[in-house]
Length: 199
Image 1 (cartoon, rainbow, N blue to C red):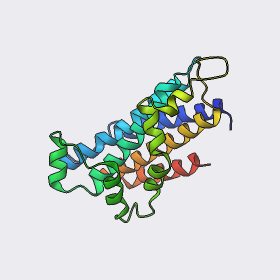
Image 2: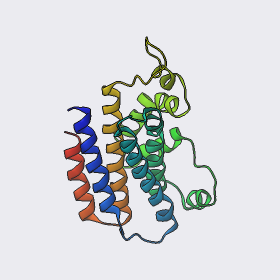
Image 3: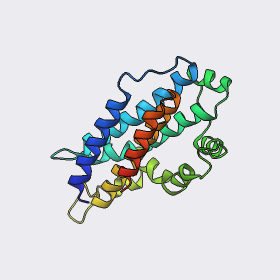
Image 4: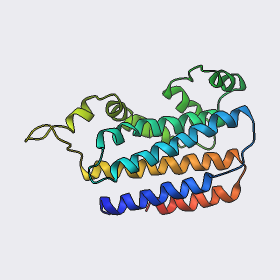
């Protein structure tokens, strides 16, 4: 699939997710009020990546720097929803930092829903690169060097990879919201959309 087609699909996905969560009724518990915003932030960062890449002059560095934030907000939301104790939720709500990413992933892997370890596999495979893009490390700097000088040099395969992966994260965040809201119909729609997205 061409980058142009994938960008068009990504726009459609982001708009669809936004429609699905618009005025979605959610319980007023503190856990919901902490996990839910994490999922919405995941979706907004995904939207931002799509908008930054779908320009006449794409803003690659900023788009790539957001990939870590999409993943991180998703994992934090899932941990708050499924794993955090009431005391941890309370502490998070008042500004205490949650455990570091390996601890969040370990807790999630111990649950039935995430026992396959796919989120951990993403961390193991891609976390260093995600951090490098976010913090202007070697991955980001290398993609601004060409034989002719200093200019954007991100491959179409790399652009396609972040569009596909962050689209999948946005869909996982929608499933998280569906679970919070006990909305089985929304969960089914999200699963159908996820199967379409993976093709």
